[in-house]
Image 1 (cartoon, rainbow, N blue to C red):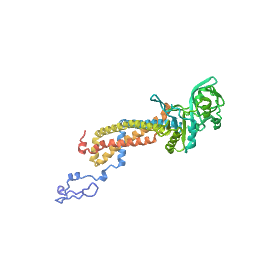
Image 2 (image 1 turned 30 degrees about the vertical axis):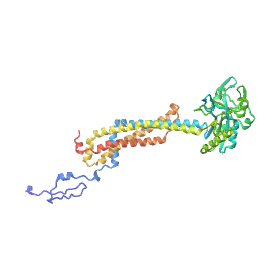
Image 3 (image 1 turned 180 degrees about the vertical axis):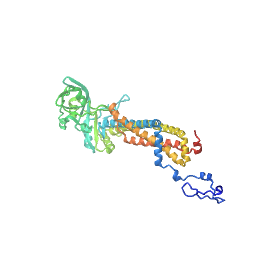
Image 4 (image 1 turned 90 degrees about the vertical axis):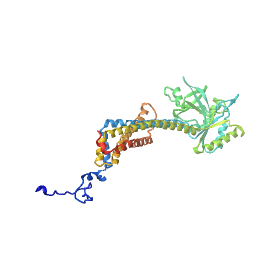
Length: 452
């Protein structure tokens, strides 16, 4: 009796929970189980959201901590090297720029031209063509100048008591100190009256003071002898340090008239220092000075100039350009290690795809989309590179801050290089992570489930 009773009919539910409507030629109540299995699950219930992908990727990385750290090593070294090298390069550029700025800005230096003897020409500055009247003509006739000073100089033995020192003595006018950015550490500079009266007064550089007064006594008011002529020390210059031309502090300044009349005994001068008020007018001032000096020296249009005019701003720009180029070159060489680190990430991710083939197959079999698998492996690669970038920033900044303490080198922490290197590290992780992630997402779930 029980065997003949009909079995209850249960409704068939579709993947979204609604009763499935089975249609077919027979239009009966029989359900094909294979047809249900063949149906694709609803995307909204199986797709891994990004918020679920990130924790899953982090868990996978934590499962292999040692390998994850070693994988990021290339990125760490690359980012740290870029930051440290750029910091060192920018520090060197800043140091050179500071030293060159000590020579003065917006400066034009007029030097005598070259001489020719027997067909052989000497270098610039060897001719005897500049005079103090040339400096006076420039000061009186050229507009837009903040200072003009003739310079006559030579080496001399300086004697102070039982001490002596050989240095360069420069006879200049009072504006020279402002033009060359000299400040006073002790005492005062000589005045225009000292220059007019040819007073025997001198201002000493720090190197000269150190060697003539080794016991630390004040040189102000002391008598020194320059080429056996007595001079009273009235001031000491603030130290500037070394420059591309040598030790700037190894000098003695005296009034121009004193040096020309009582010390060097020559009417010709070594150079004329001119400071332009507006740097954008340097070219125009150079042209005016060239025309004026040719008139002063009575040169015809066919005769070459017997003087040269040098622009300090050009020198500063060239040196800064060379320093910047070297910094970029060294930074580019260091950045190669970032690419090497990216290749390391790609290799490790390929190994991870092979090791987790069965896991990928299970995810795909239960409804995960290929884009979800791609997202997870891509997130893992980006997390590795970003983690390496952060550690590299800490290491590189630490090295940049320690170099001045340990080695005495000047460094400037490059915030732009830090931002760029971090962004590049993240981009490298994404770029080199695409291939492994795409390979994982394209696995056949049936083949992946059978992988041992």
